[in-house]
Image (cartoon, rainbow, N blue to C red; front, top):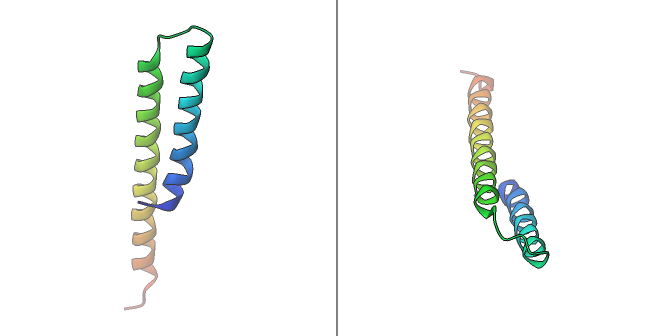
Length: 67
């Protein structure tokens, strides 16, 4: 996968794990489903944006070539 994707996803996962640890420490144990759903949506949007940008770059490259 693209390196930029992992530069975004790894810190996001670390933040989620940090929230889980902190929430468990203070006694709040519910709501992990929402955090997981938010993480899935975030990863999907980053993936979609990456593919969209790659397609645009390929299309721009094809137009720039002389025939």
